Image (cartoon, rainbow, N blue to C red; front, side, top):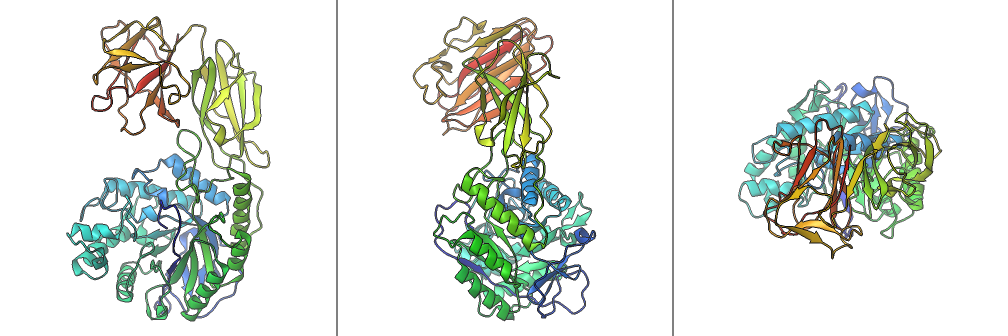
Length: 607
């Protein structure tokens, strides 16, 4: 799929073929004999067994293997070409597992060229940090019994890389020479070889020896020639005879049977069309290849056939080994969910009644493909209550969500971190409710905790308690200088952009693009928090926060930082458990951007 397109304008069809030597054990070998539709439950040794092919069927430990799962293209690199956090990886894979997924297709575990964090940032240069991240992702998938489909490159131009990188590196303007230029092909083969031979210290296996990887895919929606596909798939098999290979081309090749080192053919469905599946199955069966539904639009927003009809068609055709919908996204590191294309974004257990219903259809389908009964939903994990900040005298709670959570309960104590607890929100909050406002905020100190519940009302463990407020608390809304101790000269107050600042009618801003500062004094400060807003079209240059016992010698701090999604991006800086601190200084650092960005909004100090 093209990651960030508004509408899909074509149907991609991927066709492929492979014949392996007779008798190759625990490899992607095939015998061109059809198998039955019945899927056996894998044994305890399944994690160490390779999925193999027999004609139009996949096998695991000599039993038919069928699957359903998700596309999670972001597992290796996110849309900003950063490595997603381990929390996001685990959260997404936990959701996939709960939905019954046994396979995930992950573009950026293999499509990763020509960016700073990519596997190959420049021709012939390989990035150990990228491999280390991918190693941990593969281990996380293995721990959950999830196998991976990994494409090697992309037809499209995205920041995480594609086939054009290989022609660009050779100064070739026509990227179609990716399929014909011997130097470019050699460079691509070196890239493939680096992946196949890479040793993963978390699993103790080279990628080419790891059964966690179900299949390598020559690419995503390529326009490749037969000769290139045959050559590249043969190159892969010569290094890695264990794994299946998927042809990553767009379009079903009528000569698929002639491709002797391809195992699986595939298609992408935008919109979902049962008639198209029937034709694809016919072509795959004629070529004696396994067929795989690589992507499909789960939400019926493209004039599709009904999801239930589409899934039942997949279930009824033994030639269709499996399917992966587009696409599953995790919780954000701070709060809420990450979304990419709103049209295709799926969260578990769902953000709307329609999504909730279709998630359950997909979950039921996944377990049916694995020939298993649909189990009761698992208890959710433990949320992390990351920050509480003041706004108009109300406590605003921000928590990191947890996989499988449908709702959250919020409890408060005014006595201690151990309670007693009063429920102030009984399963009334969702991940879309955060930041969550305590409209009955008490004066003085308060402790909060949050518990997640699944759809059936089964709770997980409560979060660790979070203390806010104190007997001596100072809140400075920066409408004047009365509550600050000192400040530099080139500062004034912003009073005219409340619509961008979440309703705040005053905030401190600079009059020159210099390192201005404000100091607050409170003897024995234990807690400090600053709320700020950044103009969204500029890169972020964060404030520096210093502490001092005497107002003369300053120590740079490392505050906890939380981003709140507003018109202007709101960042909350928090310092906990301070000792020997009587002064705090906040300094502007954006000396190359707009003079009026960022602004400093609300300051809270407690002793």
